[in-house]
Length: 176
Ligand code: HEC
Image 1 (cartoon, protein in one colour):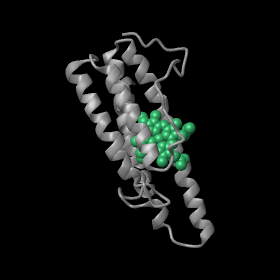
Image 2 (cartoon, rainbow, N blue to C red):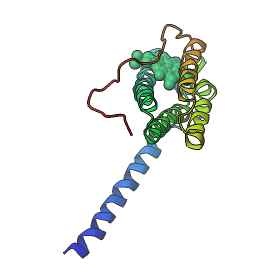
Image 3 (tube, rainbow, N blue to C red):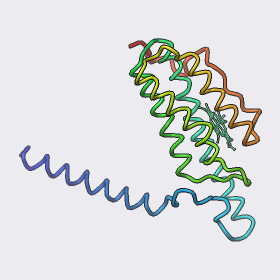
Image 4 (cartoon, helix red, strand yellow):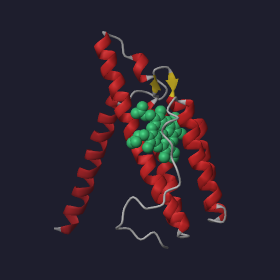
């Protein structure tokens, strides 16, 4: 029974994966295509598209804030593997923003995140992998400074990220 069941399960998983891929191909616009500007039609349509861009971006930012918090406590606890994990998550969220090709009221959000967020996060991760957490505190401050520079450049200077004092969750042990 088991001999038949396992390959069957693998086949079902494969089909589900292919279907998901097909669906996402349908929905995701090609990288670099600006969402708000590419949608023609009446003004209310544009407004809807604009709302959508805001919601999408706010969701990405919530994830960045979440991971940035956990990253700090992983680093503070000297947990290299966990810091590596959260930096990788941050990198992935930023890559998603780049892929989404977001232009919001003429502001090149995806372009800015490449310059301010992604390149710094990549260097930070490379350093953690090569040298451990020796300069974590300094590097972390640099990351936050980049978040805030981008907020300024995208006309959101009132969104100020700081080094956290309390973890976002109480049910996780950040120690290695
Ligand atoms: C493109 C450059 C850019 C970078 C880099 C960036 N942000 Fe943002 N962030 C924005 C923009 C634009 C908004 C406003 C989004 C909107 O209009 O809804 C925003 C909004 C936010 C918000 C408000 C949403 C909320 O849920 O309260 C938070 C928090 C936030 N960013 C956190 C971060 C953190 C943490 C980082 C760094 C790890 C970061 N951001 C890096 C551009 C950036």
